[in-house]
Image 1 (cartoon, rainbow, N blue to C red):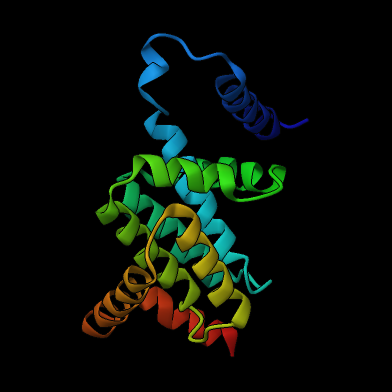
Image 2: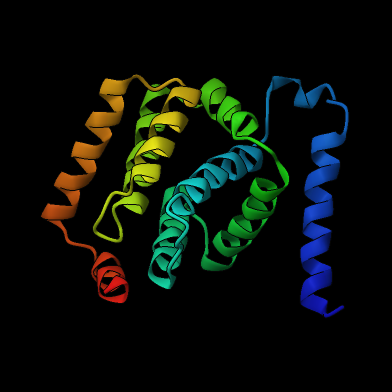
Length: 176
């Protein structure tokens, strides 16, 4: 194994040991910030993979989004995406991720996450039926009402019109 593969396995093991360990007294207050980031990132990845095409432009968009959303350096954002992708593939459903967000995010934070998901869904300039379905499913699982989901989409579209993202333009060019 290469050094990078060993390092990645160590990060994954560390995550699993944290998840499988019984809660300590200091952990009794809830999940760590890292666990919440992983859960939110896994939901973003689920949306990104919904149309079975996760382009290089969408990957860039996700990296930038994760970096900005969580205030991370580029390396930390890339690591978070790798861990979240591994977790997403390991689990059979979205309930564990959605439960963390539902329980520990405020309505405002959920709305910001929904806007971020819309950004990924609409990054290629089209809305596939499966993407719409996944958006509605995740929104229900995290406890966002339908009106909030529609509001998040409108906010995203308004922001995109006000400040067109160069990454989105690149993604549209790559899709054609």
